[in-house]
Length: 280
Ligand SMILES: NC(=O)c1ccc[n+]([C@@H]2O[C@H](COP(=O)([O-])OP(=O)(O)OC[C@H]3O[C@@H](n4cnc5c(N)ncnc54)[C@H](OP(=O)(O)O)[C@@H]3O)[C@@H](O)[C@H]2O)c1
Image: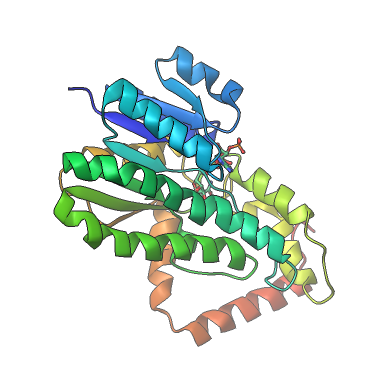
């Protein structure tokens, strides 16, 4: 029987590539996006397309019900939709923090709650949560985004053993920088932050899009992340987490450096950038 997958955030980047990768592997794909026009091409390629804003309870219920009506099963859920709210912690308004958690944390949780009863009934399934290396190591200017991905990692680590006895696998995929529209969206969110005095050097680093990810040195293609997600879904006993790309692997090692030393490194970096501004 053909296996079924529900993927969020297929309008671009990792989500779109993941939908293509599953299609090419013969899965029945439900490719979702906030704006259905953004996934029309995936529909033409053979995916079932649906409108799904992860912050909308009705959207989530409707899409999962439709999958159960049409296929009788959800074999895999890929919680991919997400974005980064950048800015120094002090400057990011509380509403923006709430919006960030609504998409990156409450959205995936909502989807997990909707699919699990069906997966438990069949005693099989895989949930892949797309986190980030920022969900393991927090850096200045990314506190709110990191907070949301740390939350996703914590929830996922609890969920995995909770559902293991029901035959359900739960996996974290942790990319470093990926060449997608992610950085553009992060820049847009950053421009919406009212800048207080005192963080000029940090802002100059954040304003330099290459310094924060996608498209910069060391970034990987969305295809590479998509293939990692597909491999995890196809394995009968996947690992708990999959870092993607060299930057992710090296950055994860930095977790073992004592926090005080890491802070010193950032202090040094800030003083270097203050003396030699980026792009000059
Ligand atoms: N690119 C990177 O460097 C990188 C690194 C590590 C982790 N990640 C993670 O990878 C995931 C995918 O990001 P990407 O790189 O592919 O960026 P992207 O090209 O900007 O794609 C993000 C996707 O999330 C969707 N989305 C945002 N808010 C949504 C909502 N409320 N409901 C449903 N969909 C929503 C976007 O849809 P719209 O087009 O409608 O906005 C878009 O389809 C994210 O979770 C991100 O945190 C990315």
